[in-house]
Each structure stands twice: as C-alpha cells, then as structure tokens.
Length: 582
Image (cartoon, rainbow, N blue to C red):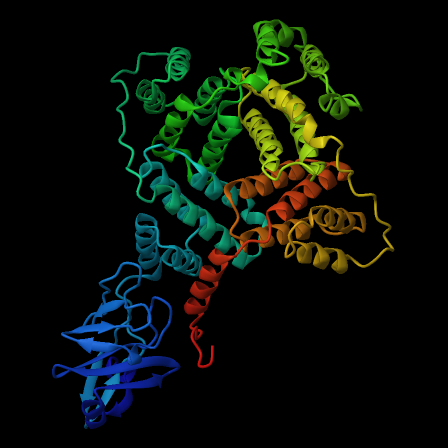
C-alpha cells in the first residue's frame, strides 16, 4: 500500500488515448503524458536542456523530440540521444478505474551528487557549457564540496591537454582561491567559470600520456633536483617528467617538490613572460585544496610548458640598451655570499623602498636588492616588497598607452605574486632569482607609468555615503573606458570606512558576470591575495585600486557565459524559461 499511496490521479485514460498527449500538473510538477504504441509514458514536461515544454514536441518510433533544439529522448526510460541535453525524468504509471495515476515523486535512479558529477564529466569531455553550468549548480546544491568539484576539474584538465597546464586550470585554481570572498551563488559561478575554461582548453586537444618513474629509491633528492634542472635546461620534457615522477614516488613532500620546480623555473629569466612560474604556483595552491596525493596526476602537466618556454635572456629587451641578463647573472654568481652576509640578521624595508624599486635606473634597483639580502632580507620579505611595487605599476597604469600594454604590467604583477606565494611555501634560495626577475620587469615597465596615473586623492568621510561609492563603482563597469572612475570609487569607498571584504565580494561579483579573459581572472586573484597579506590600509587601497582599474579596462563584455549560467540556475530552481510573448 505504501507504493499505491504515492500515486496521484491525473487524466482519464480515454482522453489520453483520444488526444495522444496531455499536459498536466501534479503536486506542483509539470508533466507530459503520452499514449504511444499502446503504452502510457509520462515525463517531466520541461525539456532538461533548456526547459521548453515537451508536450509540444513530437513522438515517433519510441523517440520523443523537443522542437526547441531537437533534443531527442528514448520515451520509455527518458535517456537522451544527445549528450548536450540531459536525461528527462520519467514517472511510474498505473491505470485504475479508467484513470491514469502517476507517482510524481519517484526515487531517483542515482543520488543527485552522483548524477551531477557524471554530467560534469560529460560537460568537460564534450565542452558543453550549459551542462557544466547545471553540474556546478547541482553539485553545490547536493552538498558536494567545492574541493571535490575542483579536484575533478583539475584531474581532467591535467590529463586531457597534451600541452599540459594552461589558462583554464589557472583560472580554476584562482577561482578556488577567492571562494571565501564570494557570496553563495557566486561561488557556483566561480566554479562554473573555471570549469568552462578547463573544458575549452581541452576541446579537440589530444590527451597527455605519462612517462614512468625510474625503478629506484636510491637516488637522493638533491641529485633528482639537479637532473630535473638539467633536463629542463636542454628542453627534454620526457626526461624531466621521469625525474619528477621518481621524486614523487620516492616520497618527496610538497615543499621539496615545489623547490624542485621553482629551481628549474628560475634557472632562466622570466619564462614565458612570467606564466611558467605562475602556473607552478597555481598547481601547488590547488593541490593544497584538493590534496597533495593528487600530485602525480597534476604536477607533470607543468613540465611541457617549462621545457618549451621562451626565456627572457633571449629577448632584446633584456639585452639592449642595458644587458640586464648579464647584470643579474653577476648577482646570482655571488648570491651565496650575499645570503651568508645577512645570516642571523633581520631586515626591514626602508621607507622609500617602493620608490627605489620603481626607479628608472636598473643598477639602483639591483643594488638595493643586493643590499637588502646582505642585511638579512629573506626571499619572502623581499618578494613581498617587489610584489607591491608591481601592483603599484598596475594602479598607476597610464591609459594613454595601447590597450595591450595592460598585459605587460599585469604579467609582472602576477609573476611577482607567484614568487611571493612560492617563497611562503619554500625557502629555496633559487627563488631570490625570481625576485630579481620580477624587479627587473618592474623596471622595464616604467614607461607604462610615464607619466603615472595619479592614485585617487583621499575622500572626505562626509563626502557621501558608502553605498553611493559602491553602486557607482559597479555602474562604471557597465561603461567602456571608465578606468579612472572605477579606481576613484574603489579608493573613496575605502576612504569612507567601507568594508574591505564587501568591496572584494562586489569586485568578484562583477568579474564573474563577464566573459572575462584569462588575465582578468589572474589580476583579480593576485590583487586579492596581495591585499589580504597587507596590514597597511594605504597598501590595501593601492592594490584594490589596481584591481578595479584593471577590471574596468576589460569591461563590459557580451556576458554570454552569464546568460548560460542564469538559464541553468532557473532550470534548477524549476522556473519557466520560455514564456509567451518573450
């Protein structure tokens, strides 16, 4: 009797046989009933693809076709022929006393978490944006942790892209980092945006095939590290992968693995305009979230990019008119003695250190860094200062430059942030070289601050209320070219006592609704990361002005991905998507 009690009367059987199909609602659920080939079939009336009423579709040879996008379903079980759609829900039927009874709340064939994780795999494999959006929303609402979702995306992206770690995985890792800054719905958006970019990167790309570790446990970590660096130096990706996998198999911990990677990534100058080291940092950060037991699946994806990266010492900007590569090479040759001179002492940056790093004389910059090391500056302390100088370049970027020049200051900033974050992870002495690379690029970017855009003047706390600044900041993102206005509104919101966490939340909200590019995600995450580590309100202000100005320079966009997410969210909530008159 328990099963019978679940059934609800719907329509007379004779009416369904006469009409062939009937649309009705039971317990708030829209159903489509079909009489086809002598059988009664009942499905959810909303097409699982985009919600169009299936009762307006057609049935032939046991196949139900939605007329909106021509998604096809096997009528008896609801399974779709088309992976870009989802399976449609079917419902048990009984005939009693000439009426059709339906159970509107059947037990699911699989738990929602399993269903949406399986659909996420489908969406990633076939680069289906709407499926990825539905999956991100469904998994969150099913109580699946963000890290479990990120882990699935990271493992997929690491496997199914022959060229390895790229922009998509970096965006996913960056979005995982900023999740604590976001409102609940935007956390779903952040995962969706990251996963969509992973799927796009892997679309039509061949998969990676693993090299095997060496069958030995007798090689020391120091020797493996030396082998790894040599293989990257001669661009032997396969050899480097075998060495890295051997280190992992032999139990190297996360600090040692990071040390191995950063040593090779700083043996040459500013690899791939900074992306290579940033990729290393993001891979390490995402493993912090999903677990370093996934290191053997993730870290080898970095190697192809490391081995094939362009090297700044091969570029004219690092050789002419000043041989910057030779200049820092002299410092690196003396690095051990510099570090030993500062052993046991604690360094504090002089008040004018940022201005020194922004100097237009590279010898002054290099000398200041050398002096700091002699005085006991750790990699982390020095990297922190260089990262702020790089962020200041972004905050004061002059908009008279070409639009593409935003990328130049951006690359330096995200590289400097990566050096800083890696220095907090491992004290590897080789990272001092990354500090110098970042500082040299801060110097090279000087012309993009000529003249520098002035930082916004402080606002009076009585100038206006907080909500006006925040609302006008967000409004400025809807108008092309409002870069200075965006920076001013962000600064004045803080000047008037605005909540930093709310400003971060709204900046991220604005980003997640745009069809943002790779660099824009990086810029927001690096700015947030650096601001989080600052005690000085002035430094926080400068860094968030940099974020606001960079976002404004790249907004607005068409917002196509947001439209897809909105459709998926409305479908998940059971709302109608297609209304009469729309």
